[in-house]
Length: 190
Length: 190
DNA sequence: AGAAAGCCTTGTTTTAGGTCAATGCACAGC
DNA sequence: GCTGTGCATTGACCTAAAACAAGGCTTTCT
Image (tube, rainbow over all chains, first blue to last red; front, side, top):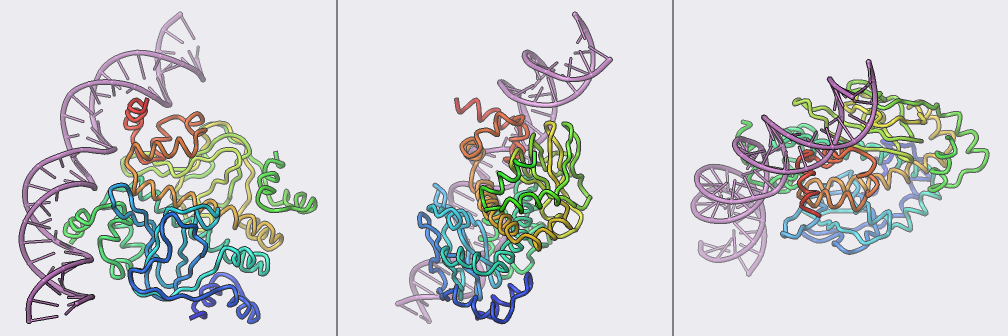
């Protein structure tokens, strides 16, 4: 379980055997069943979560009661309400499991301590965030510059797995579309 | 000029006097007049740019010839085509000056070297990116969950300066709206 | 097995925001 | 002082996608 995290880290930075062992102490593991919450709106996001197994979604509920997907994360991804985690203020995101999940959690305190104790991990997160920023930029552009069809086309190109991994109405919400619209686009495209 | 960068860095991490001096060697300065390009679509983004003075915009042009604003940056902000800068692949963004600007540039090579030479700077960028991720997340949510009026309301709350700093049609594009729509919203709101 | 929930599809109607077009203003350049 | 360009506003019209509604297919629960 823990080796998946280590492996993931080693793709970006070089850890010594000793570091890999010490790293373990900063994390706690957790399992959630499908539909269980990891975080609820209004709470402070105290943990950053590495997904070892399964899929989670983060989202906000708007005034109309509609779920708006912020992010979908599965094996090898990190999940958090980043605004809340980094500022310590109350968050707006809900995070819950859309399949049974296995997680590794690091608290804000442990994260801060880790950044001091192991510079290589600060480096790791910097590199992780670099990629993440680039991805979010692309998503922002697709939101403001693309129409429904282009958005859908881009996502199935960039994340072909996603379609098989999550129900279509979540994909729709991730794109800022309704399930009906996605259904019609799929029909049109084949 | 350089002290603005140092000052900005000191808000996030502690630099020794020696580090602050050495840091200077990694950067080159550059001035651009209004309307000049810093980066054009199809180029590899070789530099990350700190804005000392003035305002720049990054954007893509879509098939209809319409400019879609990715980001607006002024004093104290960093600009780049992050995807291109971090991957080394060709980028899609244009960046140009909407006022005369003074910039500090760091090349990808110097950036990578800096991350090795001065761990404190890797730390700085990690912290910078943390904030940046949180902001981009909020922008993504406002894109998918808000209507035109809510988007406009959020931006004038979060970045009240922006309205005075840039022409309205750029603000509109940043929000993924047309200038006409923003004009009508403003009228309605007062 | 039967009921219920969750999900996808398809059809119809509605609407927010885009598109197109015209006008006016302010400023820069000659 | 005029001319051209860039920008904001307003009105009329249009369209992409949302909303609403109904039906059918799976999967899950009892």
